[in-house]
Image (cartoon, rainbow over all chains, first blue to last red; front, side, top):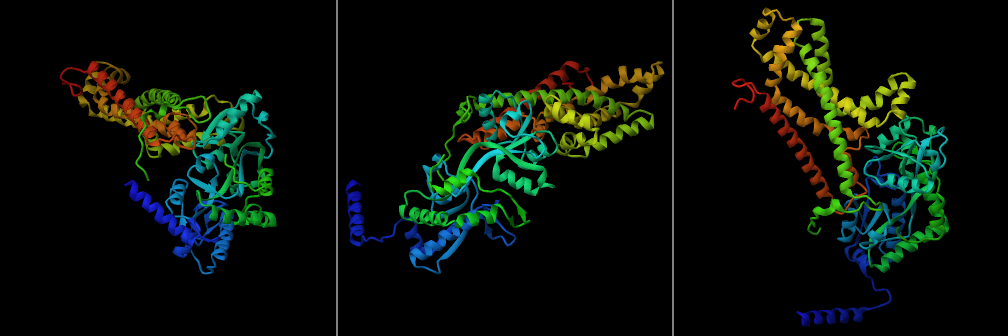
Length: 297
Length: 248
């Protein structure tokens, strides 16, 4: 067995050395070149990052960025007619589909975490989500201290309540934690006055406000209780493809184009219902664009 | 995907980023489940007996109201009833009462669940009590009245004691159901057992969610089965020798 293995290694490295050139393709780029196609993983309802429009075509902020990467791949491989396959993924399937080779690049709303970096790699962060508070515009809630003695709602099965619990300790405040069974019900708790604030990812809160009967009655308030970077997900240990993805994204960041794409999805009306999320860039995202990085949390 | 690695000890692990353990959440949830179900059962039994009895009374008006109650509460899904008590009622009462219900009432989710589940189950208990009374031979009522008892005394001393014995088996099912139905209380913020399962298997997830769901299922089985045993015990203790129920 060992001898055969040694022979195999020798044969493989011999062939490798024989062909080794500066532009030798490896990893995902080689796979794309060999198969003549790239498979893009997308979400179905992750608004406004990656979701299906009326024609069942994936659109969104992350999709726009991914199309730029696909263009760069076409240019790099000199394959203007490269076939692009679209493959829907969910939060449960996205990592296995990347690692088993079904999907080459995942464009959604995936948190770049250290835990996930053991299995996959991420391009430089393209969005930074922060956990904040949704409250009525006239509630007067500005900081965590204003929540003392009040009911604060989070959605069952999310971890936002732990940020409140963690922050309670330092601030000497006492909050009543209540739980909605889904985001819509948590929002209803604030709307009907059962809770003074709803703690959740800012982009989800912005979507709920935009979809409500009168968006001007609500606002997103308070400091960021937790910050998580989102990134485009690719396979691990694939330096060529990783460099291409990063170079493309950093290029967009340096040229200011990423800001235009951001505004298209976050501060202007978007399909399918032409709602406007009204979510300007956070200081954390501005920082991530100024100093592109792929640090996980 | 690789083979699933079972780990039944997962509930003894720390909840990520806290100093609590998953099993503590389950125990706390079980406590609320028992409190909600047992309190609701008290309401259901008392109110159900009154309404079920009322449906058999000669007074058409009283019987009609009781029938209307049963039809109303039996024909609306429980989750809708709880939603209405929790979210709709406070908007329909005067503002200061509504605000009290929303902001100052202690444990609003738990109390609303107890009342909502109790009123829902009362309609079902009422039907069983009614059929229990109707199942008795008509001669029993007539005999009671002929002995000079008033109608109320006839019900109290003759009809209801026998009717209860007759309906213990269906009441047992109802008693077991109330524990399982109490899981719906999670939808109006009660932090009972099913809520804790949802909470644990959401973003807090330990690596092994299937075990948590299975363990919660086993706890429900244990609770419902205990309820069954308690009712069987009562059935044996109160049996009238030679009569329909428990006569083995």
